[in-house]
Image (cartoon, rainbow, N blue to C red; front, side, top):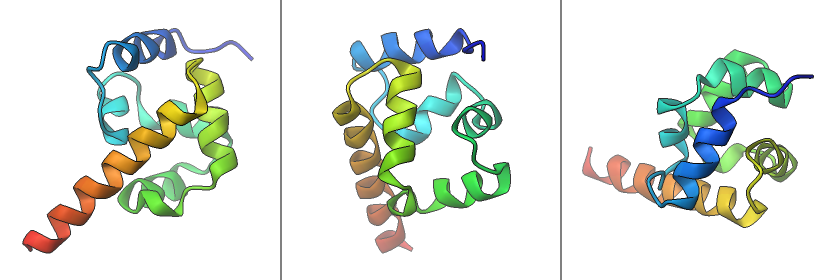
Length: 92
């Protein structure tokens, strides 16, 4: 499997502190590419994006491997996204 070159861009943006939330990844690389690389159905992946707390840890670790960042970095993105989504739900 040939890895999409945009993962390198994502890695650099995470390292530089420009990507702070999980959904920010998809400004750089399409969710369909990530879903395919993780082996997750695109519809299911979209559902998981709406409630990031439902992701399996193994899938997040696989994503970290694709991006070539420590697993904790992806976990931080998920935590930040969860917090952001939680605040947005309270405002409704």
